[in-house]
Image (cartoon, rainbow, N blue to C red):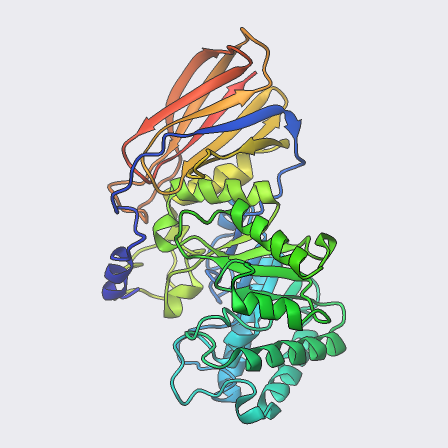
Length: 458
């Protein structure tokens, strides 16, 4: 990626080097309460998949339990989408098809972004043609007919989910009225149902979390009761520390209740873009994993790259030679794992058996994900990109039981989160004793990027 762009990313206000107070709360794990097998719900990515077949070796996808992709050719170099020309569309559809095939190869589901194939990459020009401009839907209808036909001809029915528009509540992606978007939704929903009745539809893919005070969300639920999505989606990239997975799901359920929509019509939730750039580090990666798993919601890592690099690096989990300079090559290889990749690898490859009930710290800034397999409890812990002086209470164990505790640290090297990290640091093993019904795991760390894992032999 261009050096100027990388510099801009590092200057964002959400970057982890912003001074923040240490997390000092207590999270809990109940070893007596199992919540089902691991589902690797956080192991999805927005774009991040090269169009060239097998460019990223298969083991990287397998290691993180990759199971959800999302794309549509956005920002593909030399293309502008259907709104500009049919040839532009063909190139973008080919990109989406390639990403779909890679995702399916690894057993995942794929969200096809219709607005990307249309050409809405964000920040469209004043002359850009939006669907339904001047109440003329001719071009959009023709686009739907073409692309839904291409989906069918390309054998993409299995495992595909269609996304009608991305972040309609932001002018950056939809610089038109709410009314025009609602018409776009209902019109497109009907045509998709007619053409591909078995294919699921996701939406509304708002930038904002569900809320009764949000005009676009309220209008959507009021006006689209006959075209509710099969999968509910929104984004969590605002960086507001008061907003967590728990609070967003509670707000969602409250909104559904206000509109008399039963919860059984909203079981499939996908946060199809999560984490701001400054949260894409080991600590916050673990934090997001914990929240998504507890709420049983799918999550796709946000992608802060541009142009060709958007279609690379597994949404920031990998790097390669010349990745951050002007010599970047879209088809270049030689990938290496980052520190955050190792978090996802541990989460997907080591944490097996059954999930355990957990609670985050009261301020929501420390969270944990835990599993039990045989007599081993594995814990993944992280803060929301903060230093810490925190505690994890493991409850449900017998008093005076001696427990061996192995600790691992997932550390960024030299402050550069894209440097190669092949494994977590082994901090050694110690013995702890269960007292008053709980085992206390304490950790103090000055940096804001490190995540930790604990392996308890009980």
